[in-house]
Length: 458
Image 1 (cartoon, rainbow, N blue to C red):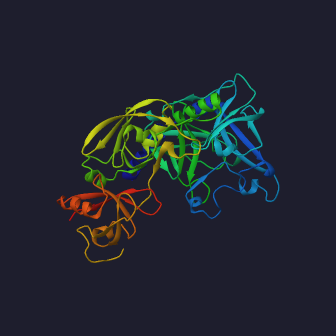
Image 2: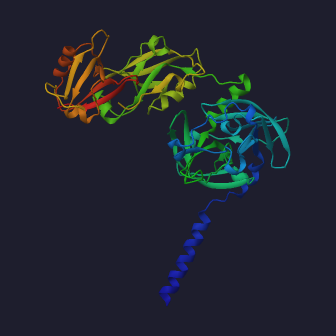
Image 3: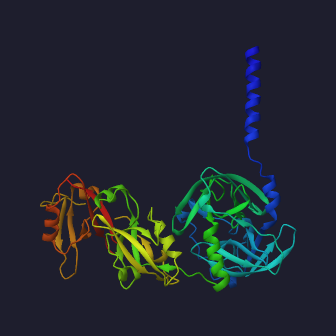
């Protein structure tokens, strides 16, 4: 009996201690809720050039990343009726400037902003940046309460965060969770290092603020991972520093200008790092350089690994497009590349990215048989390319080459950073290599961008 009583007391104390350690969000919400707004957008079919041009209904991407704030089935009547969508936003200037997601107001003919005190205003869309999904709105009001921007770089994985928005139209709804990861790259999103959280986010939260425990905004709630269209445990926010940089340009110029480098890149894997004698897998591996680009003028070559750009380290492939895009056109920056087993310093004069270009002048390369006699030690049967400059064509594959995914018709452009122009030259380069180890081949398949493939060296 005494043992049972002791266990009951310990259990109660445990619950009490846990309750004492739980955060209290009430003061934060009371201070900041009036900086959050509800946004409703009306789109008339005859005036919506984007109508019906989104992701196809059966696109598999819909099973993974569903942007929310778009018309819900019960809010978007079929036929020629108006479409109504909803979202959230937050005030960044007392004279009526509001941040939200671009997809909340994209193509809308009429945007209405509702404040916590129930006042409603017709909003003007100052600009939308499709590459980051950030939009800037303006309402005719002054003396408004504003959010305080935080520093996403100082936010730590595991910290508590709070979202305020209008999921499914329920105004001023508060949800909480933790930061579950930082610097996430999502499919087709190369310019935003997303903050990943487990904060419950649903349609209508889109464009709303993500607060840290100091009550500072560190992000805009933008996307969810979902197979159903609703919250499934993973949410993604645009870091506030990225959003404010976009907002400043939209307010001053109505559009966003970005830096341009002009390279195609791929991730540096452990195998590639070993092939290039790089101590650890880091940086962005240059697959090709666009003619006439800033990269070509600076002397950047295929097979270079860009380690630092304008003083900022390139830890992963995704870092380079973001850093380049944030660099002002006309700026001369220092670039450190890994070439032939050593670092080299180059200077690049960054140019402006054309509005229809991708990824700040950096594109990501895609992923790259038959058995035959007379194959070399890699399992390749090669031939010269008649009438075409550079490279040797693969006529047959087996062994490690087949295991690495090479196919007849592939063109090998270089071997361990040495450009290949003829079959006998390739054979001499390969003969000079001694295993064990790995060899890096720059391979082009059809019209695809070239990509480095590593093979074990027998």
